Image 1: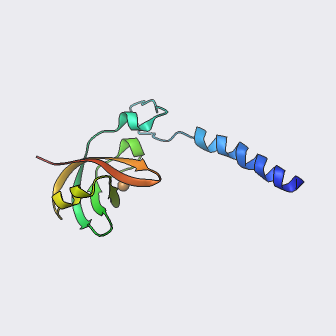
Image 2: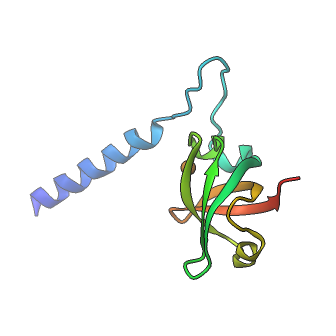
Image 3: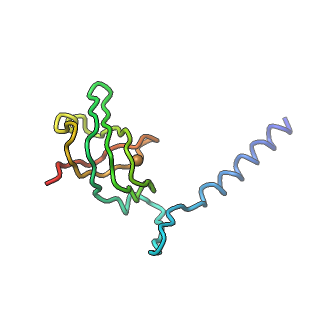
Length: 114
Ligand SMILES: [Cu+2]
């Protein structure tokens, strides 16, 4: 019993230390990290690599996603609106916003690039 209580206390005190860690150290410009990261969500360029309508997912090569602290890369996203998958095909250039929705990186805004 005593051991269980101790373990719980350690778990709680560790949590605080982890969430205090702020990432986003991008050289030159000093950028404050707001508590609500979605406040700085912005449109990002992407290119469609693969559309998986059955899974409701799309593979995009994307530029840096500053709100998610993610560098440019190619990865799989969920989409918040499955109808967007009908408007995407491999090779398309798009503009989009992504956010972390319940632990899944999700395209939350999409438009075709002009
Ligand atoms: Cu990524």
